[in-house]
Image (cartoon, rainbow, N blue to C red; front, side):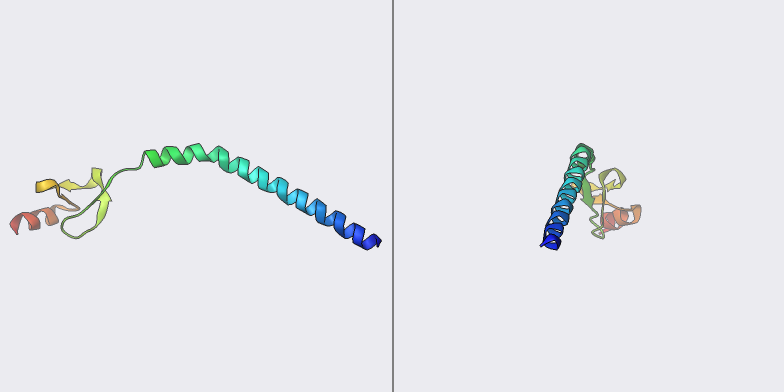
Amino acid sequence: MKYLLWAVLIYLAWRWFSAAQARKAAQASDAAAPEASVSAASAERMVKCAGCGLHLPLTEALPGSDDRFFCSEAHRQHAAGS
């Protein structure tokens, strides 16, 4: 009987300890959540190259005619020659 009592006490202590660790981890992730929302808000718009289909940031894309974007000068010239 005393072994059963010890087993129950050890089990309860283990559950209490794991619950405390989970609460601590949840508090840490809640503290990091504002940083994630800031980085998502500063995400850059991606555009697709009209020549090859590559997706790249708008600031790195070369503008073409008719609101098309290109990843390189060669693709832009190839589209203009077609």
